[in-house]
Length: 236
Image (cartoon, rainbow, N blue to C red; front, side, top):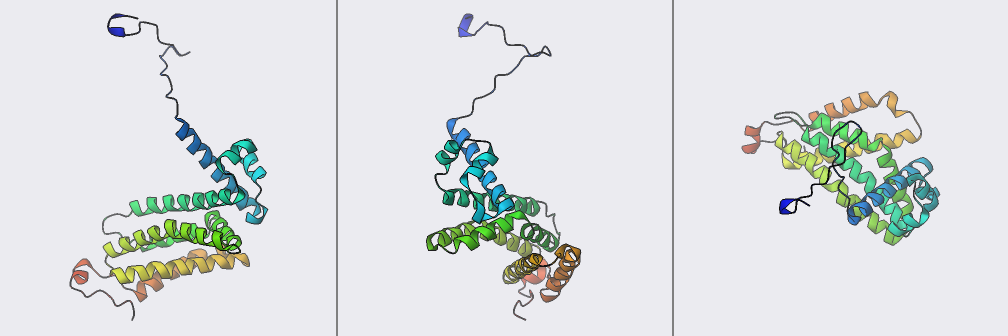
């Protein structure tokens, strides 16, 4: 130990001759959170592959590469694993929506990006896994209530942010909410058709026509018209 309490011991050198920097150890809370996220993704992947009715905790532990004891420590029941998978799906979808919303440039029409975002969500495993869980959960009153609460907590803010983006681009607040509601219903509907037909062969054309229809039903106003109260009537 040198003057002032500083260590004079030589620093550990790497093979390349440089000085290595000791890695900061993660806290127990950080390790626990990482394990929970790993198990949630594994549960999501298992449901996506096999369906919720075939979800087994042993399969989740195997997919995550951990022992069943570790899995049970973090999620003691299949129901808790299911909720974790549902939250994983919605969190991933919300992250994608946030990136699109952040990419909207000044004066840009956000409607095409909204439809792109809805298309990605409603044609992805994130949607189908959440729908599978919701259908199974509807058989249990308590589970159904929890699932509705989670869906509301994750999806409502996303739709609200898209409505705000449309409002800032010139539509009235009322029209913006109506556009988001109609667009999401259209994309959810065409997604369901994929159960019996290949929607990918016409999906590009469907989205383009949906945009034209929405623009026609609710024409975009400019900022001056909006401030003067001359925005289009959403009930017309």
